[in-house]
Length: 124
Image 1 (cartoon, one colour):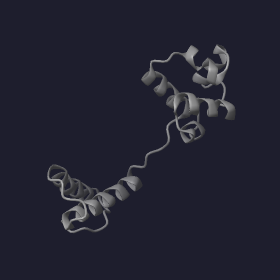
Image 2 (tube, one colour):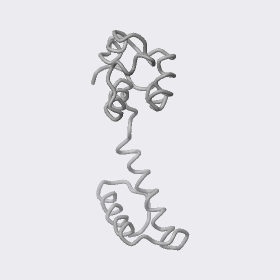
Image 3 (cartoon, one colour):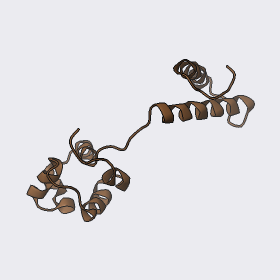
């Protein structure tokens, strides 16, 4: 496969097929084949970022996901958000997150501040 910009879905599929061969036969980094594999991955990534952009998660969904991962319940968010009724208001989209809450959730739950700030914070 000749290396060139990926502009169509067909070219994208061909690039994925070519990359899968390298995954099974990993070349030595810095070798001509290793460089070719690296460039191929860059082309695939550039196409995917244009055609399939990844958006930041909804802040409330990010909190719920982290709660599920860590086995937390609403009561566990009280130190970061406030009284239990405030926690439920946040989780039910009745109240927005404040900057202080975002800071405490970032530190306490290790959720990126960007995820907590971005998004619409409204139900999907």
